[in-house]
Image (cartoon, rainbow, N blue to C red; front, side, top):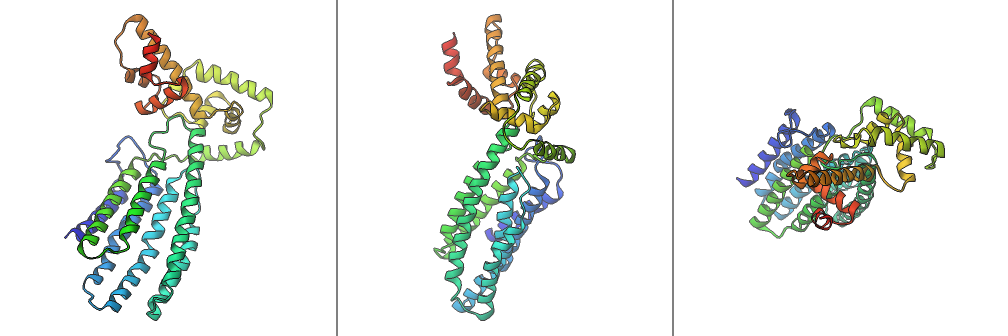
Length: 356
């Protein structure tokens, strides 16, 4: 019963992502369409894998049982495993990564298992298992580097990182994968099956939540083209003094004086357009100042919070820290707390105590 319920849950999650256009989990967020479709395909594969493992419950012969597991494992390597890798790659939105290498690295496993099934031999399994571990080890290294690059890209291009970061998701999914591998050693019998199905339920629910709470960071076509052209305009990270001074003046006039930094989800490209320069020059300006776009905007917001605080205290108006943080451009109080501590060197409670 539980086995069939998990398969049905996977199918429902698949249909939800494919056919429901609105976001029921986080209505104010627009998730990446590409990620939704690949995750729907993953959920469909999970539902199907319950079908091709079903015959193994009725096989009593050890040889036939092993053959049944080999066939089911082959189907897993053709669907569930590559789709898992594709989802991880698609979560990183700093660039559109090619997906064909996933098929290349899976080909030896699929070919090897096909050979084992065809000749009814298990002699190649240790080699395939070693290759599988090596593949995942290489994938982990690649994903760690990819997440670091993605994090730098976010800080260089976005002031608000809520619903954009993914490293926490990779940690959670990695822990789930580790637990799954441990129990895949088959400790046997009914307990094993229940644990495996429970892990799948957690993965389905968590992945569904993650997909629906991750913002779509794709640039419009015209903006993407402009960004490419702008990047090609400058070949190094150094800006001529005249350009650097001009950008500094433009930021003062349009970002600081007009308080553009209070706008939610203001990204680097939007700011570059607002002040009349291009993304490449602006990005290099922040690099030359030893900061990032995210740090620059959040420093302005923290300073705005400080001004609001002193004004409220001087006028003896009632206020809360969260209210002032929201008026300072922050969408999340946790983000405000982290930004305030980074800028001021202490948390808000300690700072308010010292400023009295």
